[in-house]
Image (cartoon, rainbow, N blue to C red; front, side, top):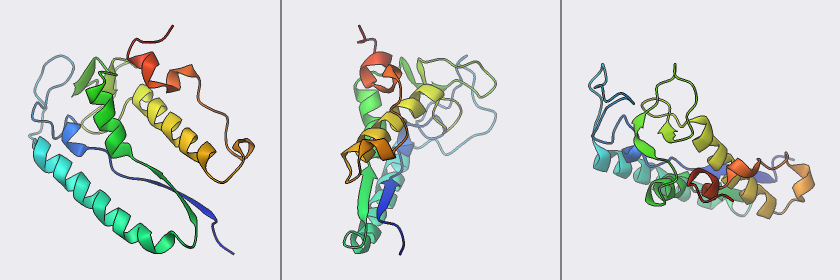
Length: 154
């Protein structure tokens, strides 16, 4: 029988990550121990090329399943453009307590708050899909909205 619905998330803009954004600093302004790729344009282009290939591959599945797509590349660009995080450049570092002002834990992984926003986008995509909302997990709390982290909450 097989799947009837398939959720697909593309790659985020890798050029925004501390690994590739040209800054390579942690939250204390210290340089990273390892010299990394450090190429924001190349990171963005690499992710965009992967995402284009992914879209091409998915064309063959559109007739067979309900594809539910989440544009994580666009979301990460929107986070930066909208100023959702006070610090979308440097990394918090994994051994630090959570900090809702940071977008990245380390060189390329999002913080809990960035994950929460992405999860909110996934939930909204799923509930718009051809399934009743009751068949999916409960919605994220109010912190799953961009306005909360951008300081535009009530």
